[in-house]
Amino acid sequence: MTTAGSTKKYDETRIAEEIVSGLPAGVARVCSADRNSIRYAVLAPGLPLRSIVLSRASLRRLAEDPERAVKIEYLQRDLATTRAAEFRYPRPKVAPLPAPSLHARLAMAR
Image (cartoon, rainbow, N blue to C red; front, side, top):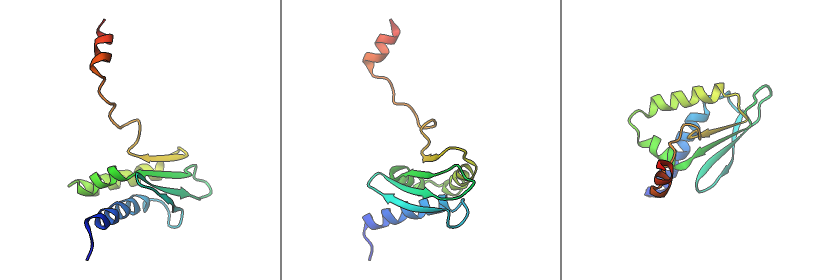
């Protein structure tokens, strides 16, 4: 019998492993799994990539997404072609910015 907590953790881990499977076998290994993220160390000569950081909250949303397979395929492709030292999901540049506060909007309007 599995609990809801262990099922969620399994889903997060399974989705993370699917994403990382886009790299050659044996290149990435889990180096840390904390409350908010799953981190992989990447050890491969010729690859500039050294670490992968996957947000657990984003992985949970991805696990429930009906377009999960397509999105995982895109993430695998992005991961395999990245030229950065670190790959993050969600990508900070793509993540939406928080809406400005009322005070900030009023200051901008002046």
